[in-house]
Image (cartoon, rainbow, N blue to C red; front, side, top):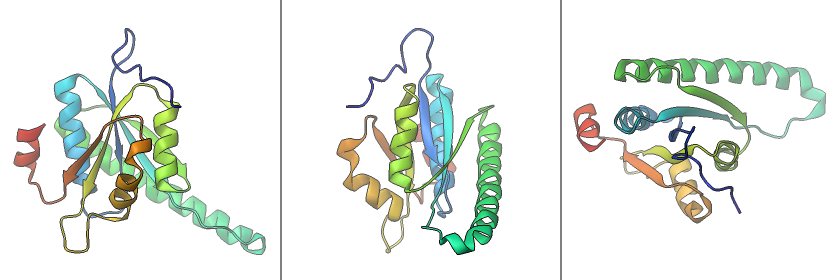
Length: 164
């Protein structure tokens, strides 16, 4: 059983966890989370998950180079997300980079920070479906210790602002 959330206890502040990935709509989740944080007095935790494959030991040098490149890409994505949050008025969002299965790493991030009060994801609005992360997370949502907010990927900034 997950630890009880402490988001609104004395000395704590609610945090919104937002996943920064390579989907076309991730910026919608950032916008919503940033606006939520402004209105609630909360903070933002940005998570980027590097999906890893089993590495063959004979290719260890190549795996190290791939991992370093993935870290650079993760930091660049988080820099871009932080800049978007800065425009909204959110400074110093927390940055988390994890490796492994995205759903597992989302749950681990939530478990590690008892101030996380919600998870914000964005869904693709195209005919191919909401995207692999949203699809997988919604299948396991009963295991999440926080509410899940799914932002439609085709919402304009003004629409997100009106909702958040």
